[in-house]
Length: 319
Image (cartoon, rainbow, N blue to C red; front, side, top):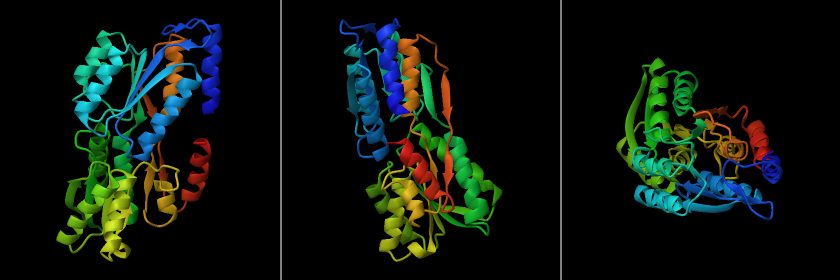
């Protein structure tokens, strides 16, 4: 599917007129794509950045790919440099939605379309947002915990991601809404681990030391849920606690495999949106179409009952 999209872009560029950019003399696409990803330390963003770069380069574009190490000021500077370099399209996964408002204004003033992946910004100076409904995902997790994992109630520790990211805020809000249906569930501790497994180990260790009774760790991504599991295992308590995450990557160390191996009780596949970003770029740059402001992707619940099936499904589609 992904290869077909890239080939379709090349073919269309060779025979049709481009809205932006123009055609180079050799028949390849003559333009530049700027991609700004939050960090390489998370497999999800590393995969997204590499995939987008390869597909755009296969379609004949020059690509500038940046990673900002989860530093907001650095991402702002990276995007400003991409604007100065005269890119024809920006693909951005925001670290902090509020902090990027000004630089998104700069992109709009320069006439550069922007596709946002996964994380929204507070303003509206972008062309399209591609992502799943994180509020709904959080609500689904909360309801699954309330109905299935802790039907008799219990004590929950929550590990959040990087402060200020829209996806984390939405997942947290949805989760808290979802568990309201079971008034016997109590959130006893909350802390941030910046989406990172190693930091989550430390955060979970502190929670385990200060809470003699913990029934479940809810982490807003799978690496942090794995970190909580490692901390609990080190304390000899993993058999008494359930672990829930988000993202469900089909990689050897991803969330689907973690459910299959019994470390996580549930996760949800968060579609990365890479294929959709390529297709939107084709519609925008080749066909000159106006994009819908929001493209909502569909998630899937991963449990021990369906994890193997979903690993085959999404592992195959990611090849």
